[in-house]
Length: 352
Image 1 (cartoon, rainbow, N blue to C red):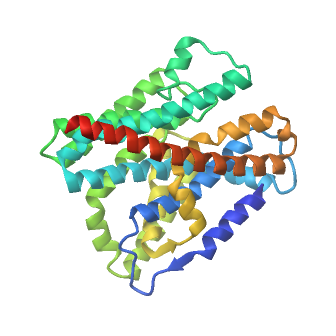
Image 2: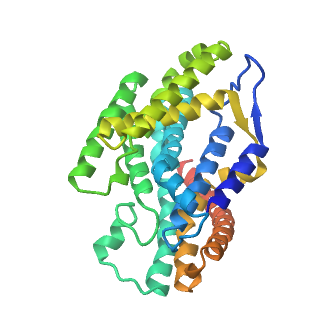
Image 3: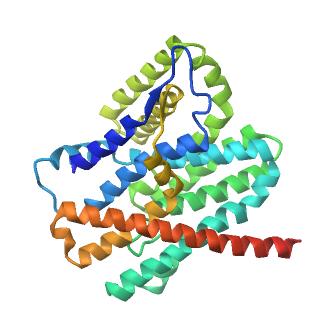
């Protein structure tokens, strides 16, 4: 398994560039760059999911499982962080009008794509694998609260955060700071509710990354002004981030506060690092353009491959499911682009 990680590292290193002395990448948080970072983690997420379907105990498997255990939920934190950051940047540019459009342009668009994915999983889980679900379980799967074999908790959290953002910014129209504070507060309430409902820990232990991304959008100009002054300031900030990450990685499971600081320092290492280090890769660019489909569809090939008996060979299983997911992602995104053009075109005509 570690071989696949080394291939990913080689891809990253082949496109890695470092800014010149006392120079920085001012566009380090552009959609292209954040998609590249998310693409790296999307491949790690794929590997993390894939190994749950096979029994691996080879010589080169142990190092990977050590890495997987250490990373844990870190592989998803940039998804939530950059999502919150991107929404805040759009609100700063477009104001309340953007927030009013979010129920359709953000929430509904994501939900109906996800609903189509649930239909696909229904065909696989119920139609092919013969699984049986209660009606309530099936209906709740469309919210991400339950699963039909698909990755669901991330979607459940994302839907909840969209609702929280919309409510917060419609109430506090005149103050972006108060609106973000409201997002933080409601996120905490949401986490408490999830804990009360005894949902698995992955449902709530990274939720704070979303409002953190929104907060970063507000303070980014000030942070850039300090850390991008020269290499000494940047190196000091990066060193402190690494030190904080290393320290809290040792006691991250002691409490929710420790785990929260562990995550925030991990984000700081990534974000501050992006100021000086950039990765250009056509391979990662492709994954960045198919983030959602590659993430949400990957368990379909995994379920089918295990059903057909390919899980007996870990390497074959990973190769089949990896390329199977690539194929599904291309087909799905092409279909969604076509459907979006029809759905949103009709909506514009009705609105007109």
